Length: 120
Length: 111
Image (cartoon, rainbow over the protein chains, first blue to last red):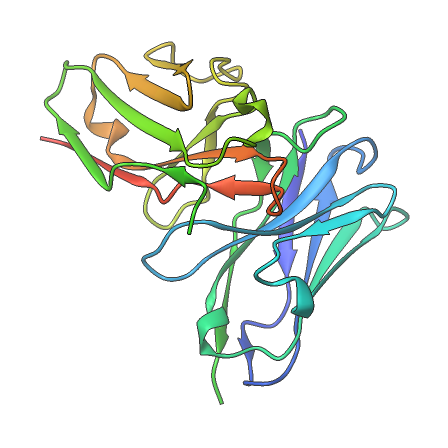
């Protein structure tokens, strides 16, 4: 069965760039949309953006100026970069797979999540 | 501000049924046929419970059902069990400037 695993630093300094990678195992990265979602401590879910296996992307307008999501099909990985971070970017970051199809509909598979703290 | 509005909390006793609403505040929420629902227990990743308004993934109890009327989608949980106590989020693909939106989440308390 398909599994997702986030990896990256758990602590990032203010003004620096947060970088995370999601590794897809047990299945193909093709023919799906893949998203990053975050959840600040004690708060709700916020969609960050998605990438299609072909490389096309779409981002949450509230984060668009700071976000880059990319895919590496040869490694079955997709990545998130969030620049100029502040304490408000402290969150659990999840990667997730959209169900197959022509549109990025429901998230059927989630990673376990990784906590990223922004602090000096 | 989320394009999808949920009540902050709902509660029910074991064996009862509860319904959580999710109202679209925008007319362009993807035709609103792509609503999905997620269950999240503390410290865990969300789990897909309903997709495309009313479809259950394999392995999800048939006590969970989804529906839609106008701009409001609903998640109904029948025969409440203690293990159902969790946060529930609705979400949808949208044709607005924000391509994907989550509701604010509803905390379900089983009394």
